[in-house]
Image (cartoon, rainbow, N blue to C red; front, side, top):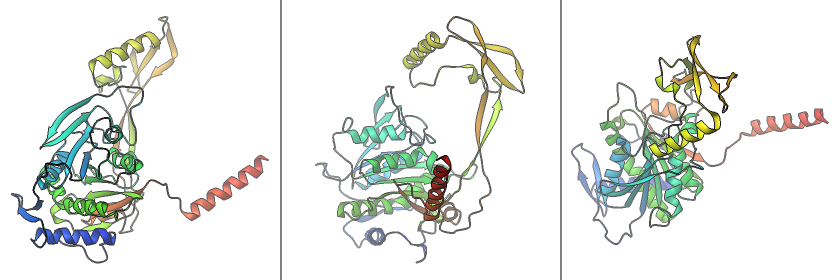
Length: 380
């Protein structure tokens, strides 16, 4: 990896210092020896400890526990032997779940193992996973040293951070006072391949190691999480670059569809995780709202379903229409080179600090204050 220039290297001095220490260790100048892997990358190898005094690292993600990004990350962390690695991740893809959590429903937790690390698959969101892991109800340890959420398939720049399940997992950790890092790979359809995740892990390990060293010293930032986004070709990156959250976002485009294009549209049972929950939900729906009768005609290629009440009487005022969401790219006008998506486009590993406090610019605060004062005077 080519080092970034002085202007681009805007990480906190403590992290920069530790990054340099880690790189020195890789060259055999420190206590940890280096090891060359088949892919040419170096990984720090240390003797495994049997007394479990190593720092606990908890890994989660949003793409699902079987995703390659998580698997490669866990394998690399376990291989180093420096940390006590545990995993608690969604059973299936929850990448756009945002900061949602499961309430008033029971989630299932299944034990498994990933490259020697104790792991649990959860039928819930990334926030469920982190919250459960930190609750003390699942693992024997009281609190991990660091929570890593990733590696996710696809970037989460700008406004997409609000939709992102991977950022939400790291944010939930910070809510509980545990330092966290979220990592994503700028995956490009028809260009990227699974081995890119392994390369992304290789270039991020030095930042993870530096973070854990500073956490132990009490020097790691406690006011924010770090959202790390790796460019589409990780091994040719230009180095780490501190970035700002942009206003970049995908365009949400809703398309009207018919049941002929989406047969599942005719089903009114929520997609639960088990057959038992599906049957229970079906029973509740049937008793509370009755059945639904499909109309034979379709208007404007949108299928309508006439609702049938408990008494079996049709209700012409209640009809269902079906839509499917598509995400479209849109032209970005922001030119600042320090913005997250610009850094990715330019080949840098973008590191964006994400605060728990919604920062409001001074001019925005002044405008809101002026409007509120004027509005209240008019009302009086």
